[in-house]
Amino acid sequence: MAKQAVTYQSIIQEIDSRQLRPIYMLYGDETYYIDLLSDYFENNVLTEEEEREFSLSVLYGKDITVADIVMSASEFPVFGDYKVTIVKEAQSIEKANWDPLVDYLKNPNPQSVIILCYRKETIDSRLKIIKSIADKGVIFQSQKLRDYQLPDWIINTVGSKGYSIDARSAELLAEFLGSNLGKIVNEIDKLGIIMEKQGTRDITPDLIERNIGISKEYNNFELISAIIKGNTLKVHRIIDYFASNPKASSIAQTTVLLFRFFADLMIYHSSPDKNQYTVMQLVKCNQMRYNELRQAATKFSSGRTLYAIEQIRDLDARFKGFGGGNVSGRDLLRETLFKIMH
Image 1 (cartoon, rainbow, N blue to C red):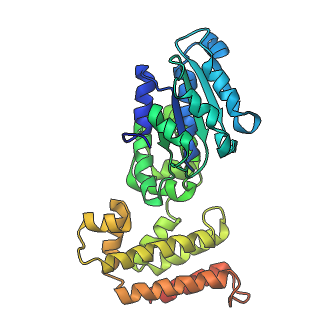
Image 2: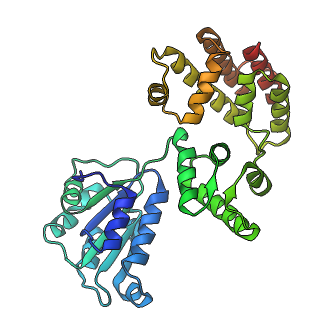
Image 3: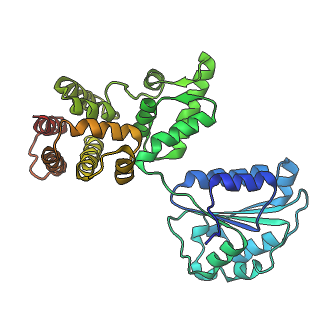
């Protein structure tokens, strides 16, 4: 494997400083950074249209052999300092066929750089090709973010674009848009265009509600908050809103989020040390979730938390048709939350 920690930023720095390695392998199940780096290589190693026309090769794994990669990489640039060979969908190439590239990397072309875009969650570090790439180049893993990491990632991404967003708004986006980073960035960029027209730089719940369609009052984040506070009326209103607006949240999505919250709360109860750092490490959560758990623990004992988890499991089973009868999803959720809260 690579000899040092490799990050998206460290690769960008190598490109910008023109200190390029002979080969880069970008792999993982989060395609956002793979695509971003691939585009950055294409547009920043070869900065002129003339350079890209004559010194760039974009190949696709399902259509080529490794010999094609080696042939491309062996060529010297016609214009510019480097010959750039980008191989997309490199995971389509059979593992047994990489030997020509292993041989090439023993004495690579000093004016050539290969970028392998390998869209797969794992790689076999025992393979000769992986050892060769680690020795001569860079291996970067693009991992999907955990749910608890998304709000902070959104805050940092928004900040990098010159805007600001509060923690609650970041939670709203994370909940509604999920873990697809490309989709999140697209929505942030759309909001950026709107903010530029309005002369503002703050992403607020009102802005999100008006332009993305996420209700700032009726969402799973507010549902959990209402449960913690014992606000039965608010809980019923949110459930009714979900029933009337299926795109806001499905019963399945709400069930998953409720289960995750009470499972986290059980971990909180089980921790002998309730300080913020310890709990955040155990639960793998951000500060906002920690504050929710601390507040919820005053209302839900460990026994009540376990009971809530059992009721949510029963809700999931009944919603999937095991003993639910003809009861609607809305009524099943209403019944479950009534039991949990009383």
